[in-house]
Length: 492
Image 1 (cartoon, rainbow, N blue to C red):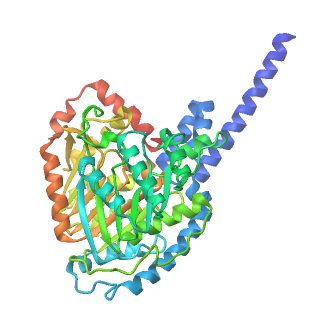
Image 2 (cartoon, rainbow, N blue to C red):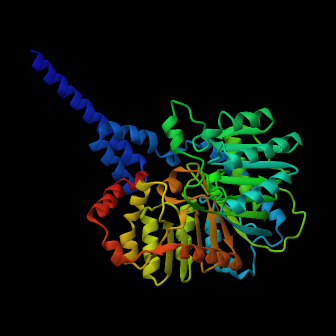
Image 3 (cartoon, rainbow, N blue to C red):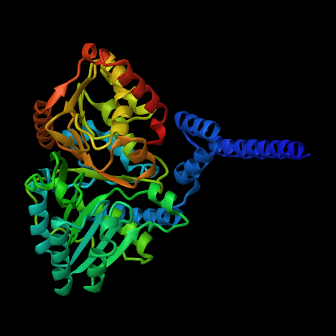
């Protein structure tokens, strides 16, 4: 009797299990945009059912489709309409007629100005400074923060409780006491080390601080998955910073006691109207996480007080679960397409979707020189193995791959011979394109592009160039690791 009851119970469990797996599988098929990601989630759910179901609902739900951040999206739309109007007031020559680099890349600019992509207007009257590594970036940032008069806006993925974090904390507290409005957004996952110390002290001193998408127990996995990966500083609406460098001692190569290896990264300092783009992104994020409604006034978007030497044009583009399309991915694809003969790409994490891998291969087949710098030293072996799984076909198509060996390269840049450059926070992987909140600055200027190219070539000299013959001689175990991890690459 007992064995019969046990057999019946087992059948009921199997039926329930089958129904649950079928229901979750249908949800995945309906909700997931790409075939590769759909198949990866189905693979997990069918073959590792309990873990797979938990993993999907924690990390796989498509919030771009479900508009988890629909309220923020409405805020952004309202701000962008007013920003475009403000730009037309500021610029005497908004369309930059006669600028050869702008005219050559007009289709690029028009794409990024489209409402679906984020309507990022072309902003001129700028000066931009290329900053390599924390030891160059941090001193400039500290000086600008000390000289702030009206407001300081800071938004960071990683802000750590170490010497540079404490130094910036001290300046922010001093400026708040002077009457400067200081607002600080931190990612609750990436900056978890400052919740109980720096954040508390800043708040007690009059600095407004808010976690972006604060992690709470019930929604822990989902909120951890959708991270604010942006790095933005705006000072008085006239000076702005963005790029790959977080607020952490590991980015400063002068502090060798902290670093296990050299840390190579790239940031940009903007002076002029281009700062408005960073300000717009910050204010949209601020109103979302603070539940405030900062008004769109000249206080945050001031009239220029001086004529800048350069009129360098640029666009600020952002993407995340609040955007209709992966705008930064589109910018990379467009850069590869519109390059005349050369594309130079640097990224610490390369786990592309089909469109990016195909675009790079097509460019190489078309006779364009495509060069990529990727880490030779990494902070994640799993990501490294997944990235390596794409090398074979790239090398076969003639793409030049350089593995940076001086240390860990964390820069996220590209530059083309058509005068288009990009510096930002976005890696070339599924997470950055689909899940993270990111921001990039796209610059249209041949002189700046040459600086980017010179920087790239210097990094190549600190790298080892891969060749197809040597790559094909890697061990069978190495090859197997690459192929197995690639199955899960859409989920990394």
